[in-house]
Amino acid sequence: MKKIFSRPESLRDVSTHYCPGCGHGIAHRLLAQAVDDLGIREKVIGVAPVGCAVVAYDYWNFDCCEAAHGRALAVATAIKRVRPANIVFTYQGDGDLAAIGTNETIHAANRGENLTVIFINNAVYGMTGGQMAPTTLLGQKTATSPRGRSADKEGYPLKISELLAQLPAVKYIERVSLHSPQEVLKAQKAIKQAFQNQIDNIGFSLVEILSPCPTYWEMPPNKAVEWVRDIMSKEFPLGRIK
Amino acid sequence: MKKILMTGNEAIAEGALQAGCRFYAGYPITPQNELIAYMAKHMIESGGVFIQAESELAAINMVFGASAAGARAMTSSSSPGVSLKQEGISYMAGAELPGVIVNIMRAGPGLGNIWPAQTDYFQATRGGGNGEYRTIVLAPSSVNEAYNLMQDAFDLADRYRIPVILLGDGILGQMMEPVLVHSQNPATNGKINRLPVKEWALTGCKGRKPNLAASFRLAEGKLEEHNIHLQEKYKEIRDNQQDFEGLFLDDAQVILVAYGTMSRIAKGAMNKLREKGIKAGLLRPIALWPFPVNAFTKNLGPKTKYLVIEMSYGQMVEDVRLAVNGSSPVEFLGRSGGGVPAEEEIIKEVFALNEKNI
Image (cartoon, rainbow over all chains, first blue to last red; front, top):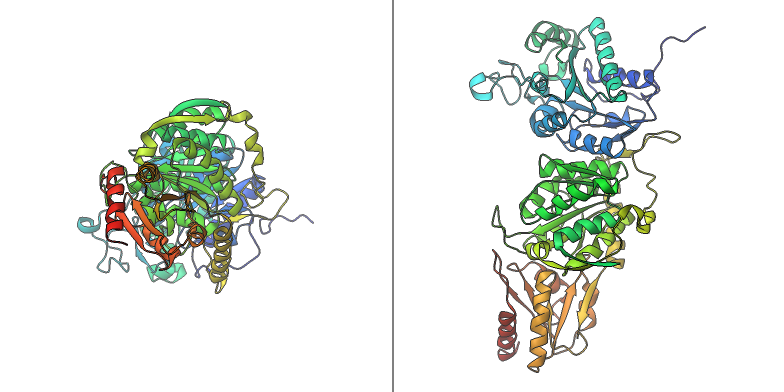
């Protein structure tokens, strides 16, 4: 009998701290699967963010590095430059990558660092209790936008992927979602592509993943995936951006 | 060995390359710009990585990453820029990552100006960032010593897995002095072979369990356990790495205490005082942390007094008072904001103290 499906070696056999219906668990697994499929587990160095995925290294089974909030791409830049034969990725949330770390993000991308970036966009700060993120939708209520995000006071949802796509050194950007099995399969393919690009020395590659946060959207998990499908993906259209 | 005329900033960069530094990230700021420029010119031929970072924050976090990956890594800046680096220095201390941070101090607070100062002593010797940690702080007083201390800085950083700060000032960074350079080709310098094996480094987990570089310790009791370990390490450093230069400490009735550039001026004042028949001595801390407390407890006599001289309004003087612990008078002379106490001011102060019979 042939075994066709199992836990990737790159994913530890432990339970996670994530809330029911959270997308991080799926994203972690997709990443681990991609690493296994490409046979790079022993070469990978992951950079974990500050945010809900701060202890992602407890779940992945390969070398990992911490980064201060927003600095993952500065840390990853140095690791890759010191060890160009290794495969280096960052895994960052929207606050990390598109608010406190915008500078590091834009400049790592503009230098064309040969890195793989996994960007989890759930339109909210999860770890700190559901505050407004740079990607929070207009009208979306959060702990720090209790009347709903307004364009005149808080600005518009920041489309960092579209912004990065303008930079000549950026080679690959795709926005995917976790709201259905079909979309999860597309996400798997995109993550694998972003790693393959690094292996092939193509350059800066980013996958933005729209990911549900039922807890701070105050929705049951099934409603949260519907919200990604019906509302969030209208603001952040899925597909290849570059 | 070859004698070359260099600025302090260039000598520090060359010293780092000779010490096996193979990663530099920095951001321009006066008065340390010759350092980043020297690295830009010479790092690549040494087989290393040079990055002009987008900010001081990015630069220190690049040092964090490079160090985690096993490289001898450094950054440099001047006071306002070093304030920005405190985030990364704290994380490095917590994650026990070695690295060297050069601060060519200028006057503050805030943007202050670009004149030399010694006003970041507290920041350097008390940790500087959040949480309770220490960094080793070395304070050269000449261009040649700055060059030599870079080897010590990297060796100490690796030995104790700790960030090391080289604390100079704008005068030291900018002035030119002869330097005895070990070799013109860092790649063939035998010293690099002294690099320790870093089993903790992130290299990919081939043939071993995964490594992790992190300061985060969320589980109950884990951070306290880690902090106790750090404190034990700091005690070991306190016990073993005190470093100072003493002149005429045996017969001195007034001991001038100064570090870095200020100690050069104090030394001139000491010589002139002795010509005038006043038994002056000089105590120059080379390590500011760990502070050379042992140097103070040895030489106390009933008539001995200390005069601490700084390009600040009194920072190191607090450590001198802690070391002396009330057993001798400790007086202070200082200026900051661009002012540097001159020889004559020091001599005048010593005479004034003698008249007041302090």
